[in-house]
Picture (cartoon, rainbow, N blue to C red):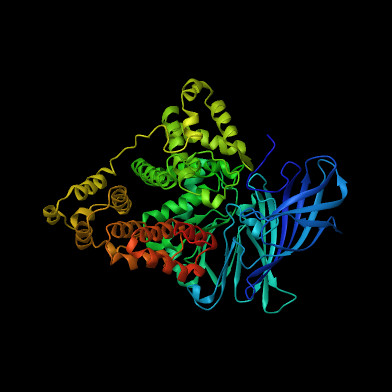
Length: 611
């Protein structure tokens, strides 16, 4: 394996590798901090090893010891997004192959970007506070001093002290609980994660949580207000898990639980091992729910088991996960649905490329993240450009069964490790050794290292998309006198994914005249659609047409949940309606404190607000 360098990490990756973490946390809701102690079991990779560097950001370090001896440490200069290197000097030298246990006593900052502290009024139950973490991509260092890079994988053990009426969960197996001997008002929860995993998958949640069993290895957790609805919505989880296993191999993580978070959770889902985090926006009973869960389940293999070595190769995580997610849709529903989802994904890719600009190197499949904040680099590109490449290769290599055979074999070969694009590509050529002449004709540079849209547009089956395209074009071409020809029946024959596709297609066109948009509301009643994917796109169409009545609805949706996929474009849309730019800024400032710190940072950039 080539020596690792990770532009997003300060830690000594060529000198040592963390093998295990032992975490002790005291969750302090009054001060919004975790008081912590972590013991890192570190394997030495070179002779004459006498110092190491860990990633940290905004941590207060009290004491560091190595093998029980107190040692010297220093925090280096703070970098604008990478934090401060924690430099530790050992009083002894070690040789390659030896281990050292480095123990650090510390406290997190109330502004730690991995942690969101919610007041009781920000929760569904309104009685108890709530804490959740989101470490991807490089926020774990605000919660644990560690080698915060996907190139290092370790097991972990944790004990977490929380107020007695709250429940703690982690991305690990529950290992019992007991009263806190130092405080009768608190309980200690224990966890163990026996499968090696990268730091960004460490996750914690503390709240007034309840659970329901939804399968032989699955429970759904949430505040009691959501739990029964969630149990109903996620009833297909075991079927999806079994389908994924039939495609990708055995599920190695033991438990597969789901946690429905409060609305400010910034992502659709997060594939924390043993405990997938899910946004409550998917509880609108729509097809996108199945997609989110299938995606997070698929990450159990591509991402969690086989991991991109650095975030520059994130398409290895996301592109393969989208590929398996759509293979699950194919197995459980139909090949036509998979094709239809491919068409929708291509549109998401076009929108991302348009937003970044077609010459922006962040639209490369393999990016260069030197001095680039991973949060600012985040987009649909690794997901959908990655999927498009895999689908293109599937067509060249002999179809879905043949290509899924390669994906399964790739997972088995690189399981429990991390991988680069070069290693993936070398294995692709090895696996398809009888088709190397075809692989040599692929425009690898165009796919991997060129910005903008891919060099080849896949030809998807348009059976499910044709009705959406036809209806979209009717609206685009309609004159005022044609508006009477539209009726409720137009959308009644579309299923939920097709309705999403119809409004997504309209967003790709020039803004519709206000008269058309008002007529569309009159005949289709889109304002009353509960499906968040439809509602989000519909409100953008309304604001673009300068329908002033839609502005408060768009701002309400942007602030009543904090999923970045919805919140950022809605704020941008209102901001671009010049009459309401100030209103967008004012609304954002009023709600900023309730948003996740990363969401707030990105919206502030979108709205050109400094500081």
